[in-house]
Image (cartoon, rainbow, N blue to C red):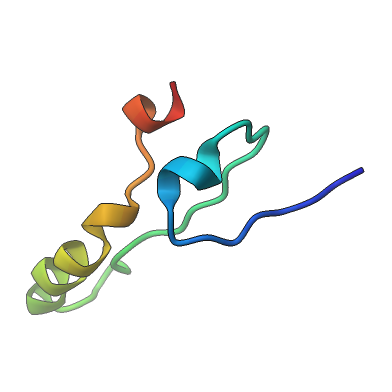
Length: 53
């Protein structure tokens, strides 16, 4: 049976997951000023190899 979890807690979201879907934080062509702003807002939601262990 399939199920999904929608959460703001990344550690809880990846726990026991078979599949992780993410998206880019900043689109290509986006103004450079937006990059720092978006990264600051989304840094806590980063899924990386350490998180997946």
